[in-house]
Image (cartoon, rainbow, N blue to C red):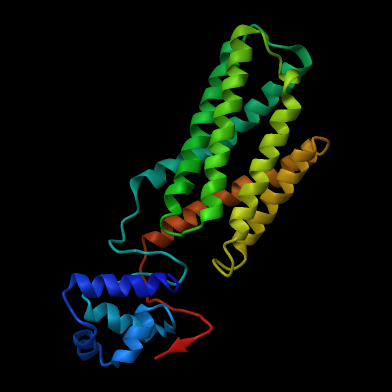
Length: 267
């Protein structure tokens, strides 16, 4: 958690305890001006100062270093489901891609019901996985990533509905709209890649690597001509998303002392 969120959090906790700034000072051996500046978000305190403040406010220990707020150290059960859904989607997607190429080459076949089943399964598991990332955003705030995830969910809803309509009625073939579909998905993947890239100075360089893979995959898919080449970075991007999710789940369930690296630090 960074400033000014940290200052607001301390102010909220202090007021909830019915303490004045002067009373809080007496409990943690700081001066009033320091408390005022911290609560105003003007400075970022050192880790031991933060520890003293939270202990004085009887607040359960948190891990704030990477933006995680871990008040009860409980991982939302949905995140485990989302991770499992992501794994299922990852493998279903290979079947879907193979079936789509067969559809392009030969048109809808007699086993269209199986294709529809794969489509629905892929859609539901992918949306469940993306929604897991949206839930994670409340622990590791990232507005750009959140918007990109909702954009991708919307694109999936539109195109999977069109695919199923074409398979059921036979009135549409994939060639009729395939290029537009690729362009929209390419944009969404690039947008998601940018979202992960905005996690600067967090988790080492892993989000930047994942974000770069998503951005490259999105650009190649968006171009239309680089779809085949885009499958490689796209596959690595989705593996990276799964890896980041399980890492984040583990992080949420752990606690450690907060540590801040900021430009302006006070004791």
